[in-house]
Amino acid sequence: MELTVVQKEILQELLQIYKEKNKAVKGTEIAVRLSRNPGTIRNQMQALRALNLVDGVPGPKGGYIPTSQTYRSLGLEIKEEIVVPIYKGEERIEGVNVTKIVFDTVTHERSCSSKIYIAGDTRKFSENDIVKIGPTHHNKIVILGKVVGRDDINHILLIDVIGVASVPYISVSEVGTKDELISIRPDETVKNTAKVLSEKNISGIPIMEDKKLLGIISLHDIADAVSKGLENEKVSKIMATNTFTISKDKKIYDALILMEKNNVGRLIIVNEYEDTVGIITRTDILKLIEGTIFPKILKGYLK
Image (tube, rainbow, N blue to C red; front, top):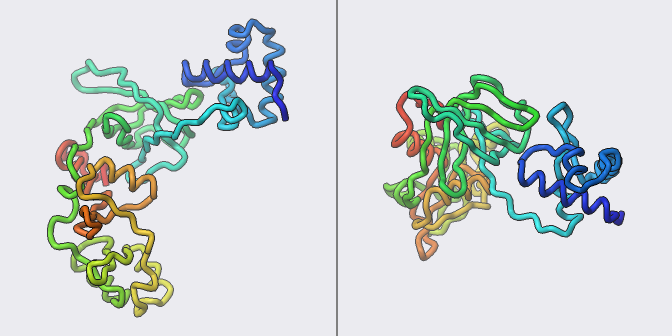
C-alpha cells in the first residue's frame, strides 16, 4: 500500500519524538508538532497500526512506538543493533536487551540505585531478582544488582547496584587454557570421552587429529548421546563441527561478543597460523570478573 503524504509526515514525526524521549509517543504530541487535529492523528494511527507500521502501548502513560517496518516504509536504513544482554541469576533473558543505564542515586554512603531501560517485557522480572547487565558495548562494564521496582509502561527496571566492573582489557590467551591443550581423537568413544571430561573436570573438549581441529564435544552432547544408547559410538559421529575460533591476541570482550552472537559457551584459541593453541569458555571470563573485581559475597551470582 502506498502511504499518503500525511501518513509519511506522521511516521517521520513519531520516529523523531521516539528518538528524543525513548518512550511511547502520544498522538497529541504528534498533533502539536504537525499542527494537526488530534482526531485526524488518532484516525491515521489506527490505519497505521493495521499496516503494522506502529505499535500501541496501552495505559495512561502509553502511546505509540515505531516498528521495524516504520523505518523500511520511509526508506531509512536500520543500523545494526548493539545488544547489551541482561541475566537473571545464571540465565540470560531472551527477547530482552538493555537500551540505557542511568545511575540516579550515587551519593548515599551505603547504596547506589540505577534505572535500567530495556527493550522487552519488564514483567519477566520480579522484586529481589538478582540481575547481571552487560558487558556494555563501548565502556565494557558489567553491573550486578537487585531489582527493587519496575515501570512496565516505560520499560524501566529500578535496581540497587551491588557491584560495577569493567571487563579487563587483556587477551584471550591470558585467560584461556594455559597448560597443554587437552584434546581427544575422533575415533575415541563417547564413554571414554565422558571419563576424560570427568577426570579433568571440564565441560567440553576439542576433537583433533594431526593438530587439525575437527570439532568439539560438550557434556550436553555426551549426555544426549548416552540417553540414546550411543555411549560406544565414536565421538566423530556426534561432535559439533561448526566450531568457532578466536585469535590469541583478541581481547576477552571480543570473545564474549562472539559467544553471544553465536550462542556458544566456548571458543577455540588459534595463533597466526590458525593452529589450535587453547580454549576459552564463558565461565573462564565471568570467573575472572567475579574473582578480580566483585566482592566475595557475590560468589554464586556470576556463573
